[in-house]
Length: 322
Image 1 (tube, one colour):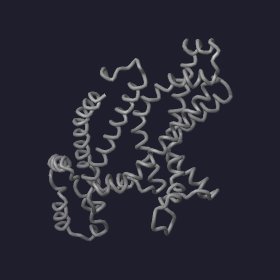
Image 2 (image 1 turned 60 degrees about the horizontal axis):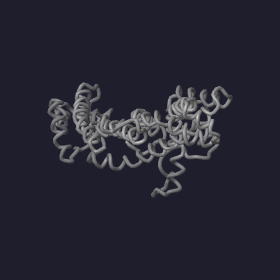
Image 3 (image 1 turned 45 degrees about the vertical axis):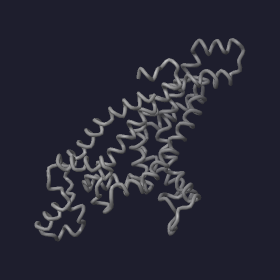
Image 4 (image 1 turned 90 degrees about the vertical axis):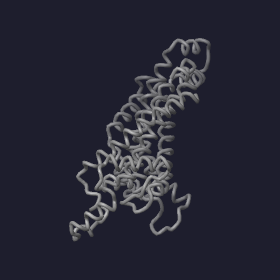
């Protein structure tokens, strides 16, 4: 296991280098002007000399490769630079928002996995039954629905129509402190919407995996020995049927991050979504590079986690050969 982790860590280094270089290259040809974004409305009445001086102070007048190398060497020492759009160090921007994004993703992911497993098992028990068709149809319908559309529909129904849940934010209006009750009530809608956006994949994968496992000879033999349907399902079919889901965990990380950005934007959740959007539109090189590096590292970690789980749970797979 340690060898696999070390090998993946070494392979992640060139990937992160290419990704960060690409961020600076794309930002360099972006139509957005970082100087005007930094100055705001003051840039409308500023003369060209003032704008050129500000451009020099921000360092955006230099070639993007030079800016990338300077940022990279500083980031290697723990200094990710200063965010021009947030007017604070990049490490502080990420540190203040990452915990809320991590909480949202963790809760949504756990709900999607648990609920998807339950629905998938129920559908796989009786293929072709009304329950199977209902679960499958719902999964395909949710798979086709954009996450922002689901979020707006949830706000209309639960916040505006029924008035049982807050429409967004982290705390109630006028509240100066974050309490556990307020946090839970404000977390329900964004986490629920994000979980619903990931639910179809887990449901369909579990249904297919468990359905195939129920048709295998070992499961038929267990039934022939007189074991109860509950024991056959939970002790044999479910264990074998969930193996493909483990590989799905890593592949869903990019979609989870993208969905989280949209959900955070719709519900005004104080995560990294707002920082990502502002960094992109303002061409904030240090913040944009740090956020992209963080997202890439999360994807690589998700793939590694999926491989580790698959190797630990499937005796046919050896971690030393991966």
